[in-house]
Length: 387
Image (tube, rainbow, N blue to C red; front, side, top):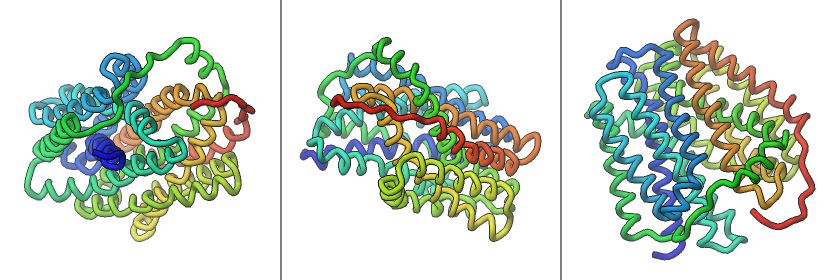
């Protein structure tokens, strides 16, 4: 298998990894109805995935140092598949929560090893193109998750739908074990000295906060959007999931627009503009109705996805080149714990005690405050080489 084939294979595993976590958004109205969950309990499910993902990312170095990156990619793919299949055995809220956390643990092992494997296979000048292929997986999965969920729910239960996806993920991991390549070298365990050096920089914590706001506005609202559209928007489940999938198509190309904008105006201006406009759109998402609500469902994700090119560029400039990989592996899990876990849990809680719309509006209000954090952001002048 050539390098292109190997990169596509790893990207397929990442696609199934991401799909396995976020297919729960379009499935949640059905799960909530069948299991008798409150809106707060539904939002808490996404927090359990994020907790598992957080600890897996932090501990990935200990796993890769023993299994090497290739072995970790295989284990992650198999574990995601088997965990999705195991939902057929869940018959209580607590069992679902435990399996959700296990799913996060399994999924969180993929990213550090995938990035290490891909960058080791290609020349440095080709990293951008290779990683761009890998990073299309999240956007594509957010588009296809509602379509796949709706198609399978017409024929099967939500548990069978997850088992179907889990079987495919397991088969893909086994196929990679036999035919895939890349990552045949061990990772390094986190060094306390480097971790301390990263976390003692105020700009790193500021960027974690900015990423948390953007992830909350993106995947955090995505997770709860079907419930919101069905419970308060007056849409049926099929129409809500169709809108959810179609609205994420913009993510497949808007990141390129964002990259161009970052190069033109710089990271700070780009982050400020995206968070402010994205925050306004999120507030409108929580307050609009009828045709305006449908329009904002498309506008809001197109704005928020523009954050990530400038966000990753800012993170790279905030730490020394030799600490960038460590900074990314520590900062992103923390940001995802907030944006992908606490934010949907909070929206679910507000949906129970007040309205989903109020929870989404509050998330948008926090995003509007993001430019104030940017004012405190400082970049260092690093001369050494490294990644």
